[in-house]
Length: 327
Image 1: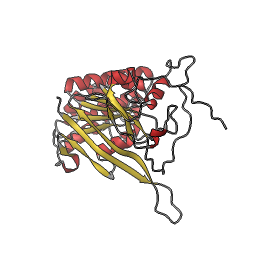
Image 2: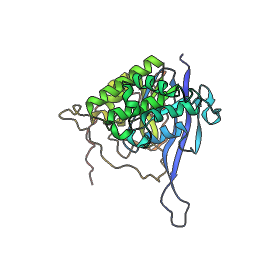
Image 3: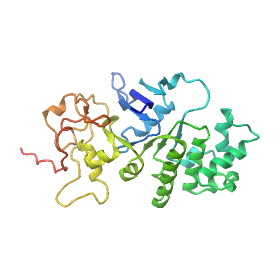
Image 4: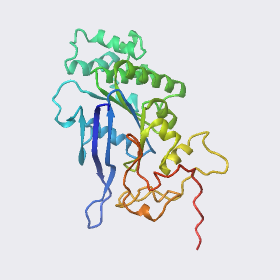
């Protein structure tokens, strides 16, 4: 069995909501009891609608935002207790331009983390940067440019080079290609795959474009309202989705809609301040039954395959329009 590099256990992150009249302020749970692991050399994808908690989860794992409860472990040790030294976790943000200092050159941006953590001296920093830029497909001349002088794809390559500067064990890529043209997306995805294979990197890849995630991830986690509702090998999940929400996501992709079947979901999202005892997806699910109002346990369908749905062990079914209500 492959050893886990990253372990996330029951992570919870909430934010204060609107002011209650004479009551305690309600809280919005962006991440609600999330647990998973990433093996060494594995690429795990996280998919879900905007607002489901993907980016908050990434920032919580990186320690960029404090969590309410739960734990993140790297090679068996809590990340909160890591000694200052080589950061083993690095992140590539969605907005490459916003994540780069406009006043710094590419060389300064990429070299800074390596110099700060003592991986290279300032005298050797430029040569170190040139080597990293070559690994992401940029020539030496780019080292003297600033972010405003680069295209979107070039900025994202610089962001990847900066993430590699500390020789990390795992990179979190938070929708790194969503703002790029399709042709550039393919180039950046290919670069990430090649770097992961060449450097034995683990990758946590976050995205909402299912074909993109399917193209790069070995395993996929499907998030809905701060919870993981389905998980498993990418090929299995996309070929035989067991959760109605996963099937809805797949049906919404261009070219997946079939005549006679409706991928549209009915109902509305539950209140963010409402405490749900049962399935959070039940207000939009076309298959809802009485047991969906009760706590839904995680059903294991294999060593790495799970689903949080009362229909998890049944055959996958196409989404059908919800039956009309009769008065």
